[in-house]
Length: 312
Image (cartoon, rainbow, N blue to C red; front, side, top):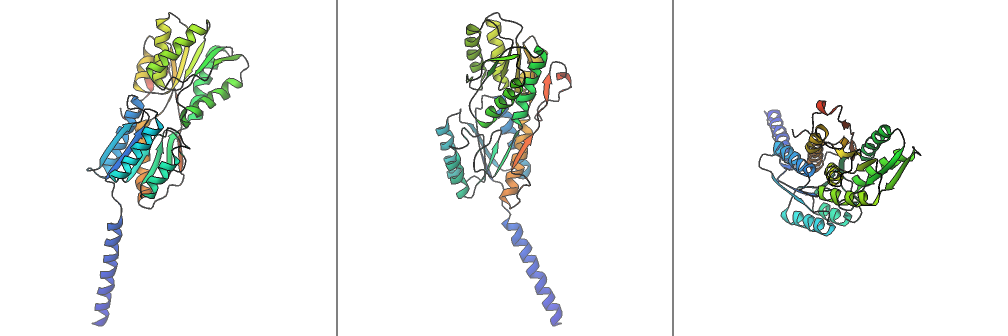
């Protein structure tokens, strides 16, 4: 009889222990997302991907996504507001990987997991992004191949976040291997937007009588570049970019000078980031703290077979 009582007691303790373990599992109740600009379809898809994955984990989760318009001070304020709101997870597209580090540390000190998406940021718990060096390489190799290794080209730069720096680095690596390629400009910031691409390209077209190709750091800039060339009645310019966005699919199928874009998948990127962040919240460290998603070149020849972003 005593043995049965003891066994019953142990069973009760084990059961209690298990129930305590379950109770200690942290639920995902609030997520704060700080992204470059919600006027960019890439970031809209990224925010949507995060929301979908978060609601798979907890249908009642609160997701707040906002753009900081590449203003570091505004992003720091957003993070402070997320901390004050008691979010469980912050996903961010860092304006400056080093300058944002104190804000990241402050959030972590408040018990918040911080995951970087699309660009790197110092001190975060994990990073999920496209292999941007590779994306720049394949977009610019396309230009080299189309020009037969000889021509005057422009690298249309953008906000100096790690993703943009890496794309330009990859592009320069390819051009440097081809002495017949002359880079006319590589330092003009087109702000990651269609309007910026339009304005910068207008200046380049006025300045340079001969431009054979342009590598734009993202799709919105590429579309703006094409518009500028049409407005100034210039033709025969090979335009490549990075994103593989829905707008660029239309451009590749339509009457434009856009010839190729290195694909990304912001929807899937965000889903991976949420999954990793939720795991870290509950003591599950990822095998790798930096995940690089490979890029594929989408061209006029293969766009018909391109599935597009996961959100589609």
